[in-house]
Image 1 (cartoon, protein in one colour):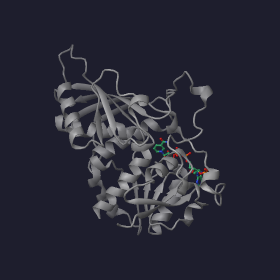
Image 2 (cartoon, protein in one colour; image 1 turned 180 degrees about the vertical axis):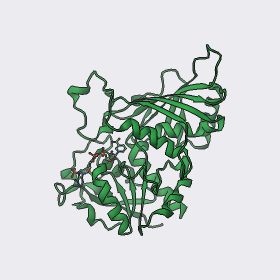
Image 3 (cartoon, protein in one colour; image 1 turned 30 degrees about the vertical axis):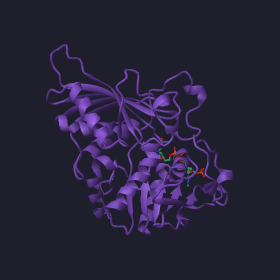
Image 4 (cartoon, protein in one colour; image 1 turned 45 degrees about the horizontal axis):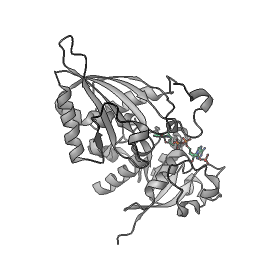
Length: 333
Ligand code: NAP
């Protein structure tokens, strides 16, 4: 049997780090080799230090690992689940030392030399790695709402050129880290603001759906909301094309994509689906689309389709995305 590839995990104790650990357990290609976190955690056993909040039990092998400093990792392949301000310094320092860093943080997503990847959509952007001067590399995954927007928009490009995308997000608590937003603020409530998120979704979507060098030019308008859902970001989309398009065609394209890539797109036709609690599972990499409909045809202009897109923010929106990018990167060598 082929030897598994050792992976170091930075920011191992946060919600994204925890999800990486459960996804790497029994992974066919990778094995968790090192866990790193802040100075306050260094030297402690992972199982004793972590406030485990995952839906799946903590694997015993990870519980026994000792937490090490970020810059002590030895594994060539690194998954970073660090806050962006820490990632800003640590990730290039590791790339300089020859590590291949796949990052969940926003620090380098919009950097012109750094690919921002959804493997099923824009793997050709790996060409940007040739611009990086380090002996190692930095690769990034998108913001946890961007992936459900850009991932769902990507197959629809066969229907015509996009004019404008209007987006409303409903984002889960676990997207805010732990402990995140207090129950006092969110229970029975909705918060119509998440700092920096609207720009991230707008700019990252255009980067992903553009060429490696030039972002897409369609307009993107975003309103974000934090809602009292534990896991699962929902994105409501109105997509205006430059030419007429029908909801039936959009549904057909999503269904064809699902049949080719069942781990990427899942189509729902029931009027009340997809829902975070009913449709997401703890290791769910699928982008669930539903409520596909024609925009208001009453003025005779049939150029807009509406749909919603839902996904697990910690899996397709973070940990699972990083692992799949590492996998795709290795396959590309
Ligand atoms: P987080 O609160 O951003 O990060 C927590 C982790 O970072 C912990 O392991 C913590 O270690 C470590 N850390 C904090 N300060 C540190 C420092 N000064 N030096 C070294 N390590 C430090 O939690 P998260 O929600 O898991 O997010 C991780 C990253 O993924 C963030 O950049 C986030 O924006 C991004 N992201 C999150 C989601 C999501 O749905 N949550 C989705 C996509 C992307 P200690 O326990 O030792 O403090």
